Length: 417
Image (cartoon, rainbow, N blue to C red; front, side, top):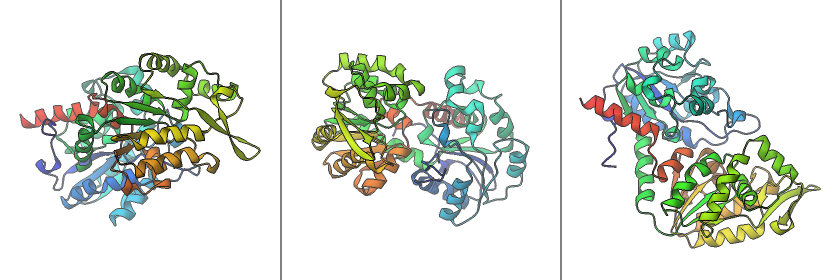
């Protein structure tokens, strides 16, 4: 942490100042579009409480969902309601990101008041598709709609959104170019805890990678294999199925259609390369589970293909992975093993979480869906560190420099001049 040059909130004056606060309160939601886990919301409280005590006028910008998980792209009204209950004071909400209504609401803020502006992912310049296609640098984002609309209204910018630290978008990296900037308490806590895992993890270090959003897993897999930090990678969920395909195993038309519809077949080629280069490092499922006449059925990979919608790992895989977890020195987890929300397919996630919670090794988990899954099956206090981040956590542990860290360090240098 000594080499992290980022301004803490204690160094800036917030009294009666308008503060633009970027949080990551992106939360898991159910089929009714209701929040089912408040981990990120609760972890934002210390920074909010500090700014309230400092008599700041606080406008919060945040996101929920993205193009990669469009089903989660909803307004932030419930987030404001949750914060209102937790803080014991009203957190207003306006369903406008940075238009005239939002600007007027900001201008009308009084000291100690809070408002959440509309979901920033309503803006094309904030979504991952735009980021990946246009590739703007921070100083090139100053003419984006969000920045030119909001920056003139504020005195200070605070970022406490480490969970989105891997995102190179205006709300995360551009305001530092124009406003005095500080990091919230959560960012310092996250970086400190993850640094301990990255620099000197107890061996063997086991990665358990699952879930439906597999870009994070593949985004860091190459690095942790090449730098030899990962001793074993246990693949579950869609990630495991991609590796089965990479090994030449035909899993069947039904699941293959799902993978193609989600444009995930592009990950088969790198998966094949990893299997060829690191055959002793990567574990793939031995069996899969599906539904037949309302009951759970399991099939060994030797009996594939089968035209079923596989939704979980099977008992053989569970047993094999539990053995690896039990002997691990450090366990890093991102993503559930299956569609755990369905009782038929909760077994893999349940059994692995029970094993992780009981393991002697140091356990680290992160990501909204990961935390939500863990909370369903184990006491989170049995996990050594629960990080708010998913993708940012993965990238940080793989040694990559995060756009947010770079932007905050640049702001620190400018502040010290």
